[in-house]
Image (tube, rainbow over all chains, first blue to last red; front, side, top):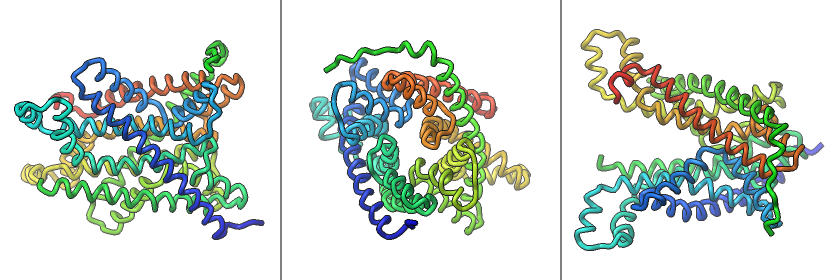
Length: 215
Length: 226
C-alpha cells in the first residue's frame, strides 16, 4: 500500500511548474491578441468593431472545455501531430484574449474624451494618440483587473488536464491513482493552486486601492 | 493537408441526445444558480455584518474558493468526500460543487452592492420610523441586489458554462453527452462544433431569462427605468 508522502508532494510541486508555464504562455498570447481585440472594439471602422465584438461574444459564450476540445481535435484535423501543450496553449490563448480584450476595451474607454480632443489638437495621428496619450493612461487603469484575471488563467489551466496535459491537476489525478487517497491529494493540489493565486489576488486588490487613492 | 471532409450526418440520429444533454445542463445550472444565490445572499449578509468571527470565516471561504480551480473543487467533493464517509451521486456532487463555487463569487458581488448603499438612506429610513428588519430588507438588501443584478447575471451565465467541467465526474449534462456521442461516431470536431453552438444558444437563453426575472423581481427598476 502506497500512502501519500513527501515524494508525492514534490511531484505535485514539480508539476505546478507546467501550470505556471502554461499560464505565462496563455497570458502572453492572450495579451497580444487581446490588445488587438481591444483596439478593434474601439476602432473607427465598423466591420472591425463588429468582428472583434462577435469574436468576444462567441468565446465568452462557450465553455473553455469545449474550446479546448475544438482546438485539440481541430489541430489534428489539419494533419498536425501536435502535443497536448499546443492545443492547451491555443485554447487558453483564445479564451484569455476574449476576456482581456473586453477588460482593456473598458480601460481605453475610461480615458476621458478630452484627452482625445487635446491630443488631436496638437496634431497627433491616431497611432500617436494611442501610443503617447491614451494607452499609457489606460494601462494604469488596466493593472488591477488584469492582475485579477491572471488568477482566472492559472485556475483555468487545470482544465487542460482533461486532454492529458500533465500539469498540477493531472498530476493530482496520477498521484491519486497510485495512492487511492483522493481527499488528501486534492486538498494538497488545492493548496498549491491557492499559493499561486492568492498573492495575485492580494496584488490586484493592492493596485486597485492605489489607483483609487485620490477618490 | 486539408483532406478532411466534414460530415454532420450523425446529427440525424443523435439530435435527441444533444437536446437531452442541453436540458440536463439547464436543470443542473438552474438548480445550482437557485441554491447558489441564497448561499451567496446569506454569506454576503454575514460578511457585511457585525459578528467578526462569522464574517472572518465567510471571508476565508470566499478566498479559498476564488483562488482554487473549480475542477479541483469538484474532485474534492466527488472523490475526496467519500473517503471520509460522505457518498453521493455524480449529479449531487456536481450541484454541491457548483453551489459552493457560485456562493463564493456571488457573495462578493452582493457585498459590493450592500456596501454601495449610502448612509443617508438608512438615516432617512429611520426617520420614517421603519424598524430594523424593515430597514435591512427594504433599504439595504433589495436595492443592493437590484444594483448588482447585472453582475450577478453574468456570473450565473459563467457558472452555466463552467458546469461543462462536471462532465469529468460523468455528471449527466451536455458535454458528457457529447463525449459519448463522439466516442460512438468518431466525428469529434463536428460534435464539439455543435456543442459550442448549443452552449452559445444556452448562454443567450440564460441571459434573457435572468433579465426577465430581474424585470419581474425589481418593481422599482421596471417603473423608473434606472
